[in-house]
Length: 266
Length: 266
DNA sequence: CTAGCTTCATCTCAGATTGAGAAAAACTCA
DNA sequence: TGAGTTTTTCTCAATCTGAGATGAAGCTAG
Image 1 (cartoon, rainbow over the protein chains, first blue to last red):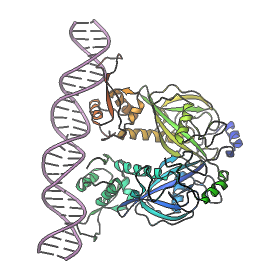
Image 2 (image 1 turned 180 degrees about the vertical axis):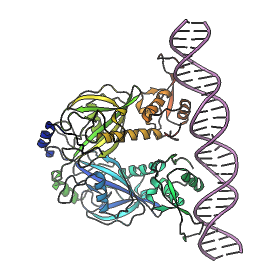
Image 3 (image 1 turned 120 degrees about the vertical axis):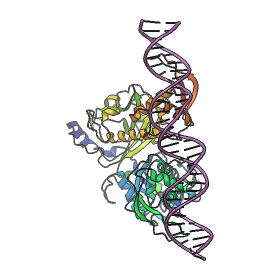
């Protein structure tokens, strides 16, 4: 960050700041909304809450809340936007130590919230299967909802109506996740610290909604430097059907994949 | 957009909205900053203004300004964030009819602006060579500055000090542009409506700072469906050195490239 | 108007990568 | 022990890639 630079300001700078009153400006609220994505029972899901207070009481919405600009009665200010995102999310569900949080984009259409002008900074969080969410303040239900139940893209017609422009935000997050799986090692964010190549393939299959050729996937993952590293261990196994005990891997250091895994192929 | 839905609200919703006072919330300002990128004389450049008013008088900064939340004395409200981005930019330079504007991300660290809590939504604009910028209100100089003069990445040590966290924002924009050239047809946004394959290659070379193999580039562009389409015309030519008159192409319909052009290769 | 240079466009070919299936290895359960 | 399952490795033809050569078209000096 390039903040808090130490170059001396001129005198005009100090006089200006003393005379400055933030209240002179038209109020705009800034919120964060978090699209928390996980894979449960082979199905990609998003965390949603049902609102028990206006506006949009009874509708489903992303976990979110106002960014705390300054220290106040509700608590200390959020030092930065990601802190705000983690704060509002940690009020709804337990968070794992390892998680991937990245900013999606911001939404600020004039009429997106009936209360006032609201600019919402959306975050995408990817995590391995998380526990059931809490039903917190302002909500009366919470659930990990499969993407497939939300209608595709803009089309929010479903029996779980989404408040505000949250259907669009979720669609943007899903598209971002799908495309980042191609050229980054992000898929490992959906998995526990150690995992098998098959589990990694199932992440791709769940998120992309396609079937991949197991043998070629295996070859490509191992040929991509830094994607995974061998732990030397084998999985315990004991599950259904039997079969050879798979090797366990952990996420490698690489963030970007060279070459990428392309959706078109296989 | 999922805004302005028409489902009836319950009575509590209306009572709630009537009683709601936006002034109750701590003020946060929302600004837009625009990273306008172009290629001039073979060099990729960004539009910067020198500030003539506090804060950070005399420092260079991105064109930007406050989002107008409501109609007011300065003008009508910005319907959406992209409108605000185009408004602040059109005050500084003439804009072409065809341009690519996309949101980069938002920045909201507590101390990024000395005046108050400011969340800035950054936009990236790609355009063919634009005219010289105006020196507008609050600025005393404006220039298309080569990326190379800004120091690489975080490192803002240069004789053109950048205000706030704008060095970081520019670095993020440059990285976004570099990587989107790989897997989208965005390079054409830097070019006029018709162009040659060589001009397209020079965009890649300028943005990536690498040299590409001309023959293979040619083959790959033409093999990528929807990237460019043949106009049937040849360039007039007459320039230096002579040589065969190149064929003219226009941008094709494709937004995403299959397969992508990878930076690693060639 | 022709020789020499330049740029654009196409061709060639060895080496790497990919998609599809087969086969081998390792394990479970009856 | 034997049939079935899952993981892992192997094979091979088809395709793609990187590097250079060749051909096509145009300018300009003499």
